[in-house]
Image 1: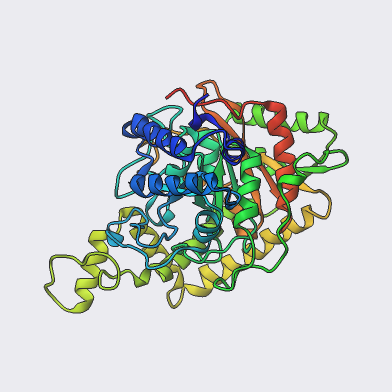
Image 2: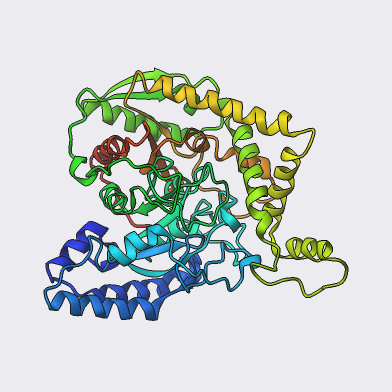
Length: 488
């Protein structure tokens, strides 16, 4: 078995036991990247020289008997909106071209500098994380390793594609309305969106502050649990991070499911769910019952309002956050400097922002404008509270909620790019979790008639990542398809 086919925890164990050299692992990973990158376009910037240099230092450290972090030698890809000091971080936008952050994000400090993981490069994404297909990048689209004419999901599509194809053993993503779970579902891997506040957002370029959360994309549930243990925790640099002890998630994976109550929201199986997706998810629920869990039907009464509520709020926050990008402080200004300063700013933003980002800024600015603020933004905040209450009521009766991650399998590149409303509806089963601030995980549970992966979503109570990882792990082990590699 080649190194890129290993699970992260398996690879780390062999490195720890001096059975393999980190330099050999990193060398093989970059050979794999070169082998398939032209087909996939997962990465926008690679850090090959830096990675090989760090691998050499780690091997010397291990040879001398020195201990390192829990992720020592792990090849880790990074979404192109999580800051790494002096490494280009562009959010896949022309307006941040050649931007090199002067500091590291907290998750980078924890995973790479303290944990010992090796940064191998930054992955492609929808510009400023706005999209569900990774077609909105200034660098061009990423392709799905299961079918090159299909999208990998978004906005963390490059991270999802790289992990699925073995270009990285694990990757970081961010999830505002499903941007970790969507590519996990479409690419047949594991994607974990932690509770809002569980992982520091310091160093994450903001899209929508009240919704964004950083999380891991991995090949298996054990790896997701391991990365979360290292990256979670209170951060004094992020006022939204919460001071709650971090569980030993990996130690709780094997806890039996006996007497666990699993809620099945009927709204997750309504119109728009593909037949193959519905069948695979329902079969998985039956497996959980066979493993000792109990199921009950649940209704989330306000779920039908989640898509308009989510997009009103995230567009409003995006409009505010992206006001700082004027070409003067960030990125390259327009070459045409005619007119006053406002005309130059407007021209810069018009040239450097892509169409989806411009659309969301315009709609968000409109929703926040005088005369419409109460009608749109304040009303959306009230509906958000109702959606959150639906989840809280459901968790009084059950331990987790389950359903499909995405209503369909991966669609073809270009199929929905000119139909933003249909594209937005793809987030219908993921964005409710972000509105409520809950943790959720997506794992592969089967394939459709075209052999495209299907995602199974497990949603939990606040800061109860332990339980969703436990449920997901048992299902993953029973299905035993997580080692299946795409045919690229």
